[in-house]
Length: 125
Image 1 (tube, rainbow, N blue to C red):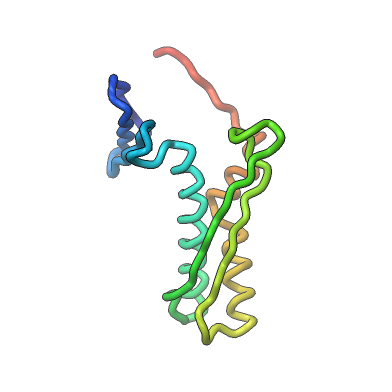
Image 2 (image 1 turned 120 degrees about the vertical axis):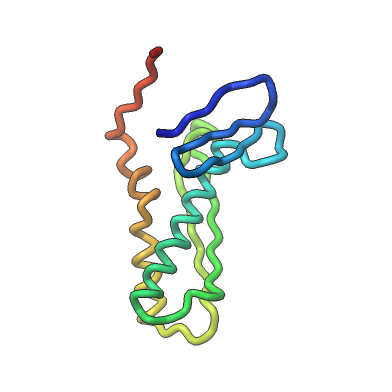
């Protein structure tokens, strides 16, 4: 479970049984939407590392840049999310292809892609 208690500050602290994450609405930290985009970039890095481990090569030096593109409904409508990957010297074409294919299957991206099937519920308890 993810939990937060709302207060009068611009800060938001979300806790789980093992971790906590801090966000802000005043620009001092990422806001939740920025953190969502950051989670997509981090997921790409996780899958790149997993692919490299499976290939028996180092992932060091792989650069991943991600950019969200808003849809016609404005900034709250994600129309496209572009992930650009730059490999250090020494990666073969086959290794690059394997890493890129792995990134395509990022778990966070998969949840977003299946988003229309998510049943979001808000209720008073």
